[in-house]
Length: 252
Ligand code: FPP
Image 1 (cartoon, rainbow, N blue to C red):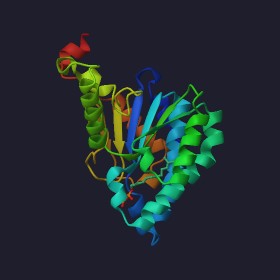
Image 2: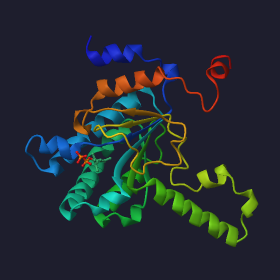
Image 3: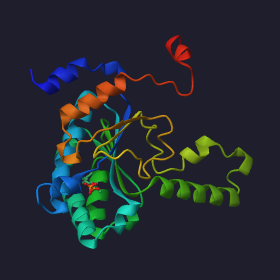
Image 4: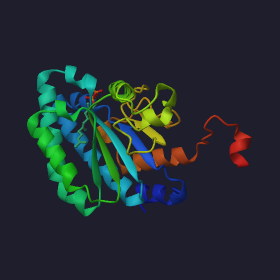
């Protein structure tokens, strides 16, 4: 039995995270270590996207959210931005038949209007063609940042107050949550970051209030199914208290 099967056998299907979010870091370093262009690291990173999507779908995780391109990533050299935009559009189009066959529903999260026309067309086209799927919900964050999303929710709330749809005193966590771009997803149970850095980088700031955080030094292209299974096992060994005491959690 190989290592992945061994690990999968140890995972309790009843204790899987409902929603896993991932910060895919380390593509550039992976390429540089091999004397290659950073773009080649991103191309390699697409294989990992495929692997984590496949495993999530196979073991019955309901929501997977990937941080593919942040608001801040627009500040990278234009050549790298162009490569990433091309790769994202190309990958989504190439994977579409398999995504549909595996019943994966694509959700686009972020300021998609800012994406170049061709990538946007491929992304929205793929999203629309998976609208009927009922398996894994795959959230792809593009031109996204947590502060961008919270700011926009505040703008929407201000408009709703101005136009009389909600009173200021009725604003609560739910009225903010439902105006976020991630509203269709529950909060992540587990956030995984590859690439060795231990920070959040403006990802899902509102949503990760009680998420378990898992950091690995592996670079994103080196993150395989077995490493993902290890993260899921680590998650199952944590005690989630949501602000309560250990006794309260254990004794119901
Ligand atoms: C961070 O690595 C990675 C990115 C900014 C892009 C990740 C995007 C993909 C793998 C493509 C995703 C495609 C789809 C369809 C979801 P980095 O460049 O910051 O690496 P470094 O820290 O080593 O420089």
